[in-house]
Amino acid sequence: MSRLSNLQWIQMAMVVCLVALSLGCGGTGAEESPDPSDPASEAAAKAPRPEFALAIHGGAGVISKDMEPEKIAEYEAALERALAHGRDRLAEGAAALDVVEEVVVLLEDDPLFNAGKGAVFTHDGRNELDAAIMDGRDLSCGAVARVTTIKNPIRLARGVMEQSKHVFMVGDGAEAFADGLGLERVESDYYFTQRRYDSLQKAIEKEKQAEEHGDQHGTVGCVAMDKDGNLAAATSTGGMTNKRFGRIGDVPVIGAGTYANNETVAVSCTGRGEEFIRHNVAHSVSAMMEHKGSSLQEAAKAVIHGKLAKDDGGLIAVGADGSIALVFNSSGMFRGAADSSGRFEVAIWE
Ligand code: ASP
Image (cartoon, rainbow, N blue to C red; front, side):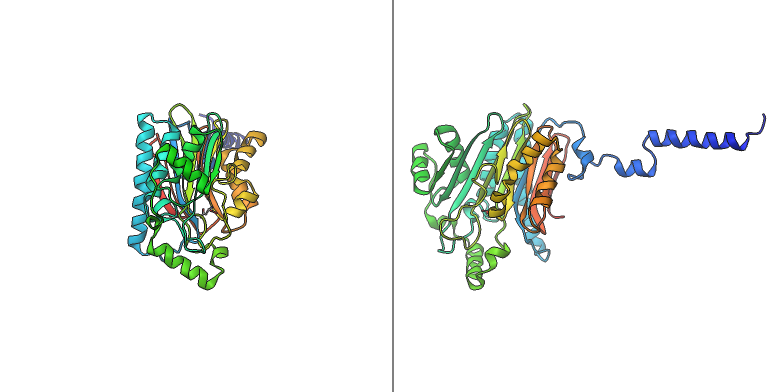
């Protein structure tokens, strides 16, 4: 066999390199290969559409990494319980709208979170709760704000959506409407938790804690895509510790803290409500996807990192393709994600 000339050797080496690159087995290809375990990965967004998907949050903010291991375990267990409930219901074929409501009820009943039972205190030592729910099928939505005796404000938000001609009810009026629906009411001391009360005392002492968004995280939310491809979002909160003057945050403001549209995405936010209202965060993600053709990950990152300031908070979202985004610019966000591929994860910090 004749020996190969130098030129032939070079040609052969080039062919081998080209084949290797086209198979994606070069160094660069491996870095770009899909990593479905990384929710922020663009590649994850390109994975085949799951049958169903959901994400939950239990608030974003300054979450100290010095938290005792038992407390971390408590949070993780609570998130896992809520996530497992949502996943199982979606697997059975339940509607996204029912699932987001049920998951938020579970989180509202858990004193760990700043919603329902564990709501933070206002400056006057009261608990004023806000919640919203939205159905991506037809943009129907319902919201309530400043309710003080409703055990599960998310149920009342759904009542407003389905049983009234309106989308947003506040205070006494919302509570009178709740009576007509037969929803459970509680005495205001139902919401008393020592931890949130101490938090208020600290905030009053310092008077600047509200701006620092200290130990008041814990707003809850859930977004889901069901087996029919329908999207829904639900969010519930006690608001910000030490809030005054009838302050209402982003959560019940449709498009700010809560939004769902089958054409694009379902979003639930958490953080400094005023900033989320100013930047119309939840709807901005949807608008970028609709008008700019951005992927869910691109849109969520652009809004959370590009529009908001550091430590403002974050969002969870499920796209119409079943992709999930969990994006925040604070030190942590209690969160979880699950889908029909077997993905099931909860996390607190980066
Ligand atoms: N966004 C909520 C509010 O401003 C608070 C939070 O998510 O921590 O009312």
